[in-house]
Length: 178
Image (tube, rainbow, N blue to C red; front, side):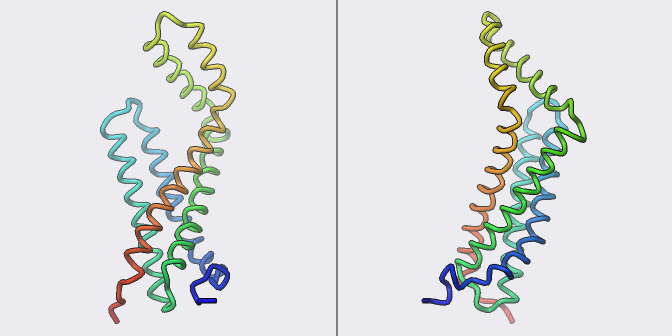
């Protein structure tokens, strides 16, 4: 088998690197979560903060892969991709844990406030069907925590996947300057 096959990868070493950069990416995601929830009205600023957070997360993954490549000469695309998956998985766990902490310990009323805002927006859009809005909100209330956690997990894994693919492609053929 070739040196770059999945079974031959040094998963323990990759995971050690991923732990540090995954925690950094998780902290960047928490900062983005906090800042986007800080703005009451959804506006251009919220979108810019979210895009800035995604950009910071991309550069954290890129920098982690670059530092790994500088210290490990046998770097391949598969090394970079698996390292990026590990980083994004750790950051996703950090964000999910923070989301749980935020909605159940730090500010238990925040979830109810979010749901009240959604209900007010739905009533504004459909003022002639308050029964239907109440029915839909009942369904949303029962699944809202799961939707938030799944959204946090999937978004971090997706960001890590995209940044890992692009960073591994960029770094795979780059020559290191000695």
